[in-house]
Length: 215
Image 1 (cartoon, rainbow, N blue to C red):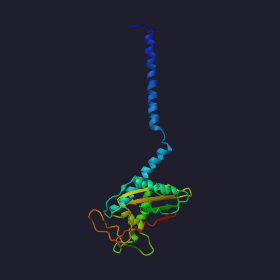
Image 2: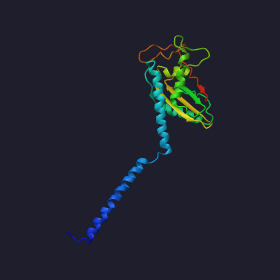
Image 3: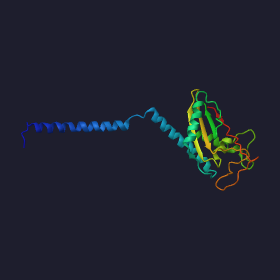
Image 4: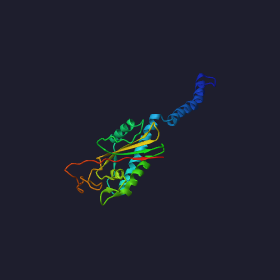
């Protein structure tokens, strides 16, 4: 055994003293990585995913009530909605994009409105939809609801924009679009179902009239 004062003994003692410190530093470094605050871009990405899930679940909850195929989230439609929303971010006017998709718009004066609340607002138009005559009640809107449940619409993409002028604008795009003139949301031209009714051999979408909500 070497003498207590030998260099080897000193090296061993120093090594043993440093081990807890090095271990603590490694653990602190690991914890710092786990506890690091998310960046704004990370928070934005998480918010988009959360809102996408909420939009989709709210829509499919309505479609389940009429036993129609569930919608699937589509990134292309979401990008289209987001781009249109960014064009309207300064004024958030309720203006349709008149693109190739079905489209529902929602505006709330305060920024507490959620995707689920927007979809619920649209779905409440069910009370104004007369399925027997395939028409809205006189003086009422039901186009948001019929677009949500339109049987042939299979893909969905939405966005939620905070307006610079105040409030929240929400936009949802649907593909294939719905609300075709003289067609019912319960008809289908796919899957061997009922044949959609058309006039003049051409199809024309009536669009989805928007709803403006105050407060």
